[in-house]
Image 1 (cartoon, rainbow, N blue to C red):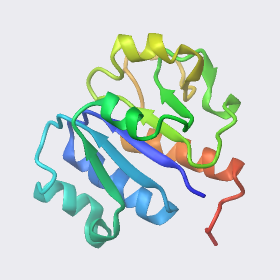
Image 2: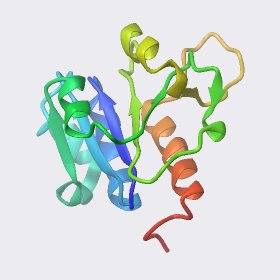
Image 3: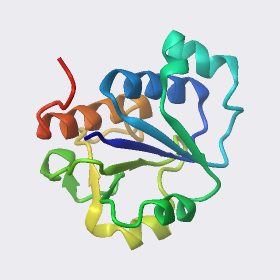
Length: 155
């Protein structure tokens, strides 16, 4: 039992490194849907992931359709500032996939429309800034999902 974190076309290597580290320490698998805005062997990715990067369970896909075709029966949830429900209102299931969009533009409109019932957001105050940092958002949501599952395999 675990959760799956999906990064849709990530742009900032340090965020991906931090998210990879979070995945290692929570037992989550990281899935990246390309293209990425950097090379996965970029030193900033591994620096942010520190010595955890070699323990990361990582799969890279050329498209979102490739990912969903591989896991057609798994539940998918989508993080977006445009979600109507809070992340705490989602009943995360074991082996679910939690999808996060690009740092600059979030998820594409067609995915948000296709999966509108699985869309959620992390609450924030109204401000002129767009959103929380991606790696912080992933950590918040991952721990909510894992808490609902009673922190499997964690001490």
